[in-house]
Image (cartoon, rainbow, N blue to C red; front, top):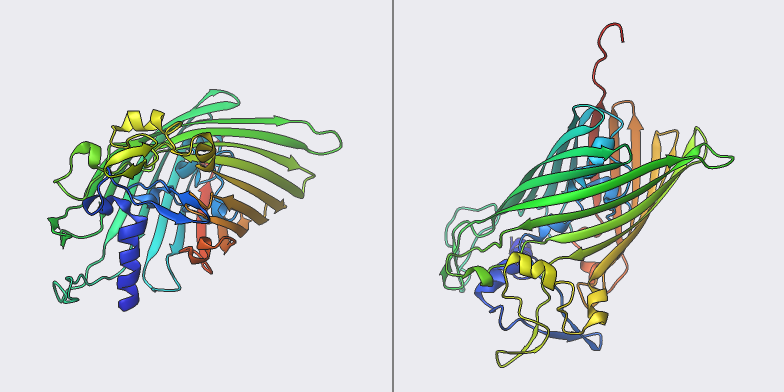
Length: 404
């Protein structure tokens, strides 16, 4: 139980900065010095929305906006769904969380897709994050109740995708977000409540097949998505809107190329850039901004401001771009081997790691596995370190009518 309280405290005070708004004013954000330069990471509410929830993409460095379409496309770029080869399907991925510390925290992702025809598709998903059983205590360590609680967060979304032309599609997604971390407990002198929000995504996906001399062919893919644009979230009624926390709105850009060597072998190479569309915290001294711009703005102001408000100027703006590289090899469309690398600046979170993955596909059933290998100083404490993520998927074709 002691490990669980430590883990939950870390999540509440670090991974979920929305609660810190009740302790640290947005006008006076903390500034830490490390690596000889100021670290100035961007914080948001419900960061679980930014996680790669499936075992296939996480095996390729968390890439997903411009890879080949699959049943996990909903999270990265829903416009991919209409390019699925199968007509409908469902997928489920389970990811243990902080497995080295606690046994009952997890991230679960359930998604499904249905193609009405060759140009229209509908998809939906559920992303659920459970923090396991927790006992809340006061400052003296005395439990508020003998009852244990199970803090949790989840997001439910639905998307519609349509081909504009044969090689280009567009999708829109609506999302409901629920975050209940304190279960109404009295925290830091204030009553708390569950956080609620609504958000939307938009995505574009390009997929073009072409001939490659002496080989079976190739496929070029490109994708763009803007995700999690929605109202600010708070766990207290005592905060004004400008003091509430932004959702992890983000811009993804990616490109990919699949090389079909022959009937038995194919390999794909993918690259992706990812940037939060959230204002950078300014540097403060005696409640006065000495670097950057105020982040006490509304959602749309924050999106446009995020491209030019870093206190360190252009150099720091470039540090806020995360990037990934990934590769996937398929043998006879049965066995896949994956490799990826994810990079985030050491001044913006320092998540840097390699990832490995394996996929198995037989007829309508598929299995995916991934494993994370941290490479940076702080990534060594990654919640998924030494953790095997597992996914299962089922995909089907519609039954043909008699005579077809």
